[in-house]
Length: 143
Image: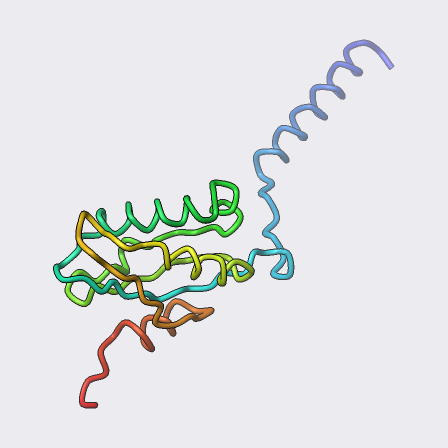
């Protein structure tokens, strides 16, 4: 082969590999390797109404104190802002299925929210967010 032909072959291979890299996407993780999640529905019992930020800060501090940073990361705790109901004082926490008991235990250590006495009560647990909302968050009308 001549030098020009070699150069053209190398150029074509390089361009085709760059093209493939741009076109290819990451393969999705198969369901058996995905982290299983649970939705923990809770209620804040206190004398006054509590905003999301106040509740988030106190829950986060209590869980950090009990589980630590590594435990919080392992549990994958996410306090969902869009599921917080200010009137009912109920919300949902998304977490890993293996750390449900430790997160429930950590919620026991919340005793004050923004200087007011408060208790965090667990209402239920579900594997699907729609079921968690329909069972525990939405009031039963007509009952």
